[in-house]
Length: 145
Image (cartoon, rainbow, N blue to C red; front, side, top):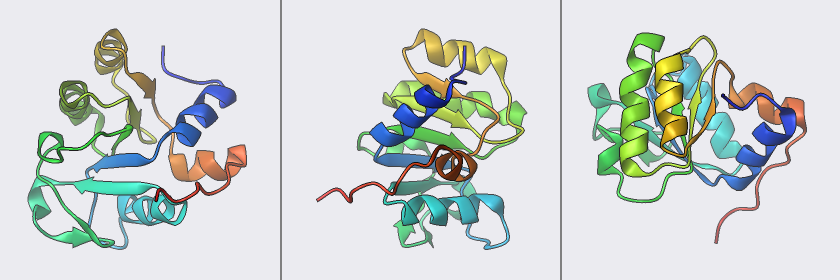
C-alpha cells in the first residue's frame, strides 16, 4: 500500500538527502526541470537520469543513463515517466537498493508498487514532492557537510 498518511510522507521527505530523478529534463518548461530545481533549493541532492541526454548537465548535476550507473546510495527515486514506463524505473530502484520510489502526479502502477513494497521499498504514488513539501510545512534540509 503506497504511503498516503501525511506523517509517513513527511517522514520519508525529512529522512531523504539524495533523490535520483528518472525522466529529468534539461528543458526549463518541463515539470521535471522545475521540480528538480525546487528540490535542490530545499537542499536535496538531485541526480538526473535520462538516457536521451546522458552526459549533459541539468542544474549543475551530471545526467546518468540509468540508476545503476550512479554508484552511490539513493534515498528516493522520483519517477517522471508515463505510467506504462514506471515499472522499469521501479525495478531499477529495487536493483540499486533505493529506499523509496516516488511516482509523480498521474503516474500509477499498482504492479510496480507491489514489487517495490515486496522488496522493502516505501512507495508514494500520484503525488509531487514540490507540492507535498510546502503543504506539509517541511523546512529546507540542513545541507549535508
